[in-house]
Length: 354
Image (tube, rainbow, N blue to C red):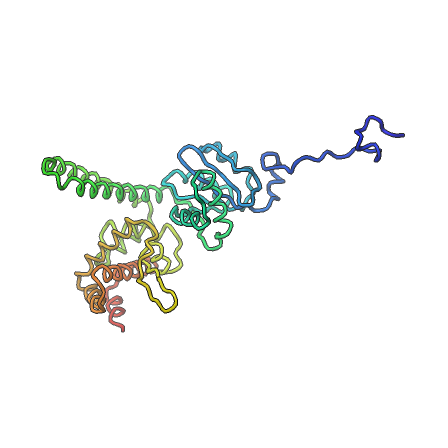
């Protein structure tokens, strides 16, 4: 008997058809279905209040969530484990998302904003919005993740040391800017002197807090103590390198040099050999500290012959100092890997080799 109550499209089959709707998105999928989803490539544009998230495969529309723990955890429950999530390094705004995503089983990447800006320009992006930035980041991580290092969350103590180093760097820049700006105003000479004195005291206090925080990271503290035995390295520079060496698993000294931004960047094409310049990746304050260490070390008995040998090649004072800084970083990394104080005899023999 025909089912007259069935919809018109069903009568010829004499049965009920299963309703077909749109493909379910992550907000409607149960957890077990989410786990079976394909790994996603996600980009997040983060600011102090909101996070804009895009998917390279456009598996869902661009989303905006609050940059708060509760909202982030709720969103992460809808993301397949093992997915790749990338974001710009934005001071401290990205840290909550990066840490929670890593704990949730995602592959997290924190990208240098300069690299993403140049990538967007190469794609021909004419504008800049939070949505566009998130989409560019998603596309970047989908294509380049194999060449990148995944994010490793620092410990609470490591983060404290890093933040104090960053704050000290800001104070040093501020002091230099004020000195340059007000030096030519005789009427403000006394005020400038008082201001710089107070800034120097504040910088010294931050350095004291930095050393106190370093004591809570035994590996970094021991590495800093060993590095400080190398002529030319002081308390501040050895603390910086000790923290850096123990924070990330560097495979060799070349990786360390690349992280400092002291590696030369070739500019050759065909028969033309262009002038090599530093890549200047990594923290600028770290490069400044290492350059100053090399400038001081060039006057020591151990490092003076090496510095003079570079000058004898016709290199400028700056170029020779940079080369010396690279050599000192390699020696510092070797001291760290061997987990013992500096042996000047070994370096002297190495420097004497042709």
